Image (cartoon, rainbow over all chains, first blue to last red; front, side):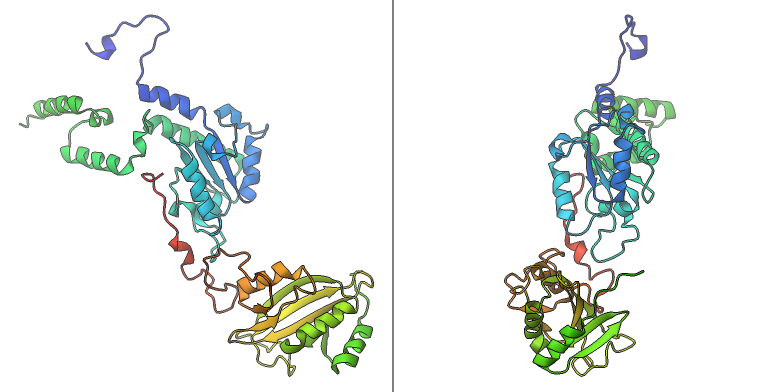
Length: 206
Length: 177
């Protein structure tokens, strides 16, 4: 019996467990404010009442990395600060995400000198980049909304989406198969065999 | 009306009486006293005893390939680094700038931490960024750059973007974190 034939009682919905976990996670982000410069002021404005980050469930800034799952690097990071940034990132628990806020955090900005890191993504993984010098709170909110979309789209309850190399390998395998497999099938060998067999019967290949 | 500190003629006369005629220059009402590195500690000690109780700043200038030689004085001719000591007196409001010129290799001046405790970190900063050694400093470590840094980055022959020091850090990927 297919899922679409299921007769559901009132007020009952059917969903994937991954979707449920993503829905919870994306609406309850706990930012870690790594604010080192003027972007930090805009970050504070974003969290304050006028722009009200609580509308997106991300208003609780915690200064302990153990209690956070979203690092917002706001401002330039100097070489001497980089080991601190990396240690804080490692101390945050999974699943975790990173927003690089502003020109300096993303590229080094105007500070192309011996002392300033030319983009934190050279040393830690980054999910979203926010342009601007400094960005308006609206831009940061847009980045958080985009990150929520990304979490809802790609997240899994066990955090398998962070296995980047494995994911790339599976994508390549799908391209080589050239059959209409869904990403769910890629994680489910039984379903994958069924779909492959269907595809072969449909296209006439044997 | 801009702030002007009181004239320092009496101080210069006292210095002349003790150490001989001083080499001085004046720029916008600010008097500079040029001192040889070998005698800088004695002169600064004398000035502190004479009332300059506040060391405002210790800094340095690298005159490498400077288009005009900084000052045509015998004590500084052709020397690369010009140290700047800014002194002030909290009782008379007098201000005096001391210039000490040193040259490669191993530019060294005596430390004045024993006179002004404020010189401790100021001299560490000058050591860190210019590589001027302060003989007798109690704890001459780097102040602003990371401890493992090897160069003195405010020297004019240091490239603006560095020599690749910042590329030595480990990269944390998604798999590792």
